[in-house]
Image (cartoon, rainbow, N blue to C red; front, side, top):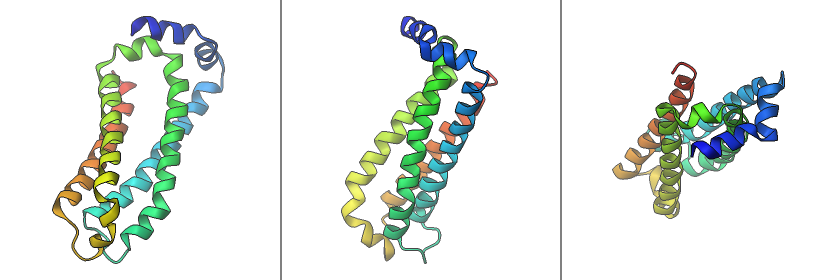
Length: 157
């Protein structure tokens, strides 16, 4: 893994991300925007699924906010790739970074599982939200908040 990180750092992308006066700062701001979109979108949906704001229809809220969350995730991946290329060597050896990546995988798998299990029963959430689904929603929110926190902690480790 360290060899791949060294290749990435030496690549044109890595050199540009480190050498440009604007590349890394712009990627960092884009990463923050992506996090806001992801957590703002999926966080509100998760809170609704967990039981808050019962006056808001689940399906309508999900249809409105999920695309924003997906857009945020795409922006996070793109901007994170630029930042990673600038400093890949130290990142791959960072336990905090490794935990962040592992939790991203958990969060993505969780989202796929949630959609697969509950997509046909979303209308039922208006009257009797299932406990297992509510717990999954809280778990999703916890995973993504932890990913964001770990991302911030990387700078201090």
